[in-house]
Amino acid sequence: MRITCPHCGERDRREFTYQGASEIMARPDADAGVSAFADYLHLRDNPAGDTRDMWYHDPCGAWIVVDRNTVTHAVTGSTLAREGRT
Amino acid sequence: MRYNAWQIFKEAFTGQTGWKPVWRDPEPKKEYDIVLIGGGGHGLSTAYYLAKNHGLTNIAVLEKGYIGSGNIGRNTTIVRANYFLPGNSEFYSHSLKLWEGLESDLNYNVMHSQRGLINLFHSDGQRDAFVRRGNAMINQGDDAVLLDRDGVRQHLPYIDFDNVRFPVYGGLLHPRGGTARHDAVAWGYARGADQRGVDLIQNCEVTGIDISNGKVTGVQTSRGPIRAKKVAMVAAGRSGQVAAMAGMRLPIESHVLQAFVTEGLKPVIDHVVSFGMGHFYISQSDKGGLVFGGDLDFYSSYAQRGNLPMKEHVMEAAMTLMPMIGKAKVLRSWGGIMDMSPDGSPIIDRTHVDGLFVNCGWNYGGFKAVPASGWAYAHLIATGKPHDTAARYRLDRFTTGRGIMDEEGTGSQHNLH
Ligand SMILES: Cc1cc2nc3c(=O)[nH]c(=O)nc-3n(C[C@H](O)[C@H](O)[C@H](O)COP(=O)(O)OP(=O)(O)OC[C@H]3O[C@@H](n4cnc5c(N)ncnc54)[C@H](O)[C@@H]3O)c2cc1C
Ligand SMILES: [Zn+2]
Image (cartoon, rainbow over all chains, first blue to last red; front, side, top):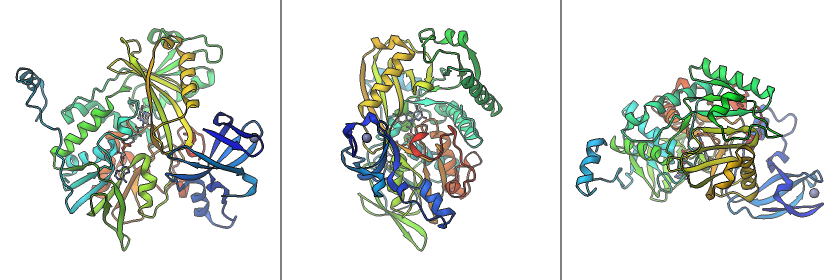
């Protein structure tokens, strides 16, 4: 499995740390209420197939949103998290 | 047919022609009182205890593949009761007691072997943590023995005690811990449930859950619709997909866990050995293969196979702990899909839909839980009330924050348990 870091190019999966589903990019508003935050923290779509999740590139420190398939392990795209994709 | 020594003797003299299929292969009926989704260890034990403890037998277990095709046939078979948080402690203690009576209860040899489990530690801080865990186990009524370095040497003379990074300080021995034959557990429960009248329906994938006015009414399957008064989800790694059919999102992320086995060897490893700092554990199967594994691959996955980095890591940890293992040849590796929960503990509960129940979140520890999970889930489905030993496995703990059971203290990220 190889992942493309937008800064450093395509690298071995060993250089990255998985940080969970990209659902964490959609943080509820501060006044959204307790259950919205509980859902945000714990509940997951958990798709079998195409997914989007967060990876951290250990050497350069970039947070990346990666497009991936959970059944085939194919990696199809990546962007910097600060571009705001969920 | 009841299995006993006489039967074996008789078959030996009659050409082994008298053995019968162990369970029927029935057509699904139009309607059942209870439908269980998933014929893994937990689904089968639930069906068995519904019949045995509650006298309910108008039940179908719907399995999309064949019995034993999921994690129940993929795990590394460790059975233990060394948890320490209230909630987990009493549940796994109950499970181990059920294991100890399982073979005579099922009239089936599940090869339960209480060979002892040793958790190694490598620092004073770790020793303190294991003393605390051992005390919790003893307080729960289970067994734990603190071993110093020489104590470990008597049991495991072959490990490297003086590794520079992880010198062995000692270990916590759990004498009643051990292993069991995983397939036999599935087969034994399947046979017991079938004998009591439960229909085990294989190659039957549930594709929809029917709900009307907030109440469950049945399921859609690859073999047609089936009506049911109660529906119980128990699909392990596929729990998220199944729950989605009822419009639910679960606090579950599915991850792949790998395991490995070597060629068959003469007896060499007598215990279950757990090297936590190296994320490595090992035991020897009765066939002689060294069965071992490590951590998750760490990214969400539904592929029942993993990647090379974790394989390398596990092999390195094995060589670090027991250099002798370098002489063994690895025969094969495989993976299974784990239903990881945000606190590492399971869920056995009702749902917001009347008559629909959920059992999931077994992480990588659900094999040892098979008896107690089935017992508690059957109780919940039959009576509508949680069983005492599983009352803390509530779904709403992730909303209220009350009763989160984070045994490893690693926070709410699913892959870190
Ligand atoms: C490599 C590995 C090592 C492990 N080691 C241990 C260990 O040493 N000790 C321990 O305690 N635990 C261990 N585990 C964990 C343990 O195996 C699991 O937690 C446990 O088996 C899960 O419960 P189950 O047996 O019911 O799951 P499964 O056997 O996976 O049962 C779920 C079933 O549901 C079926 N299903 C899914 N979707 C549908 C649908 N839509 N319709 C119909 N059927 C469906 C699946 O086909 C499957 O058969 C390990 C797991 C793995 C993968
Ligand atoms: Zn980078």
